[in-house]
Length: 67
Image (cartoon, rainbow, N blue to C red; front, top):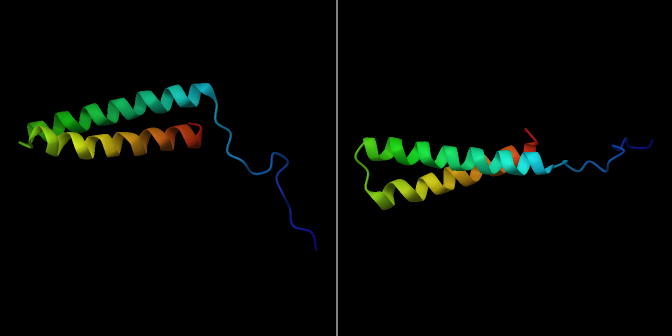
């Protein structure tokens, strides 16, 4: 029996709009994370490193998921 395959090869489509949206979401997530961490009393480095990671992951997810 033959396996079904998508016509587009199963690749996730990523457009320029998704890239721009991913960048915007990543920056927004990082900014909110830093603001919240600083409000809770974290130092600059302790706020920036997790914020950069969270922003990167959120931005990549929006870009790759084509949201």
